[in-house]
Amino acid sequence: MIHSVRVWDAPTRLFHWALVFCVIGLVTTAQIGGAAMQWHFRLGYGVLSLLLFRLVWGFVGGYWSRFGSFLFGPRQVVDYLRGQGDPQLGVGHNPLGALSVFAMLFFLLLQVCSGLMSDDEIAATGPLVRYVSSEWVNQATFYHKNVGKVIILTLVATHLLAIAFYFFKKRDNLVRAMLRGDKTLPFHAKASEDGRAKRLLGLVIFTIGVVLVSAGVAWLDA
Image: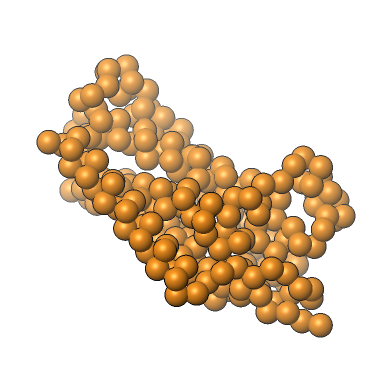
């Protein structure tokens, strides 16, 4: 029997695609430089707002978006790699996907934080530069431009390869699920709550994140 299950709620899907847009924009504006760096910072603030939303949504979002639904122990990871894991492990983020998600969230947050303290000594200066020592600025700038960027691009490439693998090898269209929210499964699984109230909650949380980031940047630039 085939079951259609709502896995990804609308706020999670919007977060995902907004993050994709921002990361593409950040890489593009960094390569262009010059006046485009104004947009680089704006997109960076956008990513920070999105990350704040996701950190909160990981506790109050739809079932499969909550961190508790994809916190796996070493044994579960090994069983999954051996093909012996519970089928339920693949409904939301599977054990390998979960590691990718946590790594992406961590390194994106680190990249944003290092950007706030970076100075290219030309035209782009992070709002935290004047509040930290020159040593911190130098280290943050080096990490942001030479280390963090490479890590993020590597994680993105790995993510795209995983999507291709699941599509061609396992016939599992992960992109369609993130667009529509539903997955077709051969077994019953818990559905994520995705009603009007839940979506409104997501909008409120994201709006608060935007306000906090905007107010913080304005205060630092004052």
